[in-house]
Amino acid sequence: MRAIWKGSIAFGLVNVPVKLYSATEDHDVSLHQVHNKDGGRIRYQRKCEVCGEVVAYEDIDKAYEEEGRTVVLTTAELKSLPEENSREIEVVEFVPAEQLDPIMYERPYYLEPDSKSPKAYMLLLRTLQDTERVAIVQYALRQKTRLGALRVRGDVLMLQSLLWDDEVREADFPALDTDIRISDKELEMSSALVDSMARDFDPEAYTDDYQVQLRQLIQAKLERGDALDTEETFGAQAGEGEGGEVIDLMEALKRSLDKKRSGSGASDGAKGGGSSSGSSSSGAKGGKARSKAKDDAEGEEAPAKPRTRAKKKA
Image 1 (cartoon, rainbow, N blue to C red):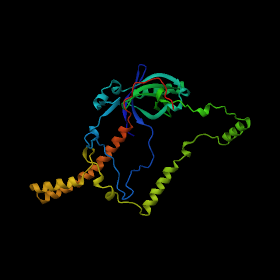
Image 2 (tube, helix red, strand yellow):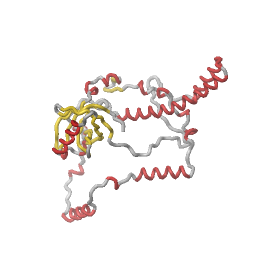
Image 3 (tube, one colour):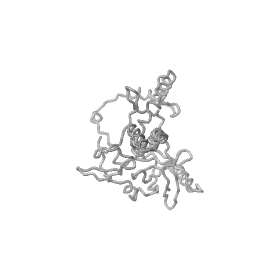
Image 4 (tube, rainbow, N blue to C red):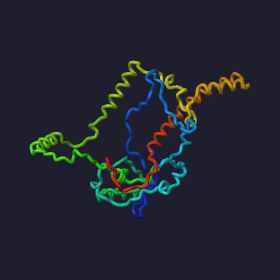
């Protein structure tokens, strides 16, 4: 596990240094897109609509559009916001857990004590256990001010991000406004069915059948030789070069020939050609790293707009 954030919990006058870790992970089989004709990998480019150039990830800023005008926000400007620089999880109040509607819960995080003595951490943990309450907190993470619930899971503190009140939509279904009569017999039979299926919840008793079957399908195709050579099919031409640009094989060959004609010699020219292949290989690896960085960035929310208390209708 790798910490994604470091800060402290402000609990009255008590300061609890902590590290934040994602408490969940995706178990899905990772699939990518290919051309059904030849199996060639499909990749997407970050192309500028003005100049038509492929843009490196580090050269991308964020923007907000309103009434035909666009405001560009640089990474430095976003990081300069006071809330973004805050490294504090502020405890606002303590509430009974049952008062939190489950629809408000978002992503869970584990909190690890980040000090030589975890006494303050254990004090807060024991306090939450003894009072049977959760702490409502506010904090900033990934360019967004967040609401959260601090609670205990086993012997560790957990931070669960919460939706803001105006992010929860109201259900507005006309069919539910009609007068439906349910007889005592129907209710009795329905309750009997519930009783027959009632038991304690065991999460280990459930499996993701689709993922199991998908892995079986993949393994079966591998065993009968129904697979493509990854090196040849998804090779250098499909890789991403430095700065996120797609390697152009013809351009690489042209550079190699130009280097040879300039008097570098046959051996140097051969090295130049080998360098093109090496660049393509490192570009593919770099492409994977940038692809992960892109996924993380896409997972980040845009800066929060000023909040309104009006609830959204479905």
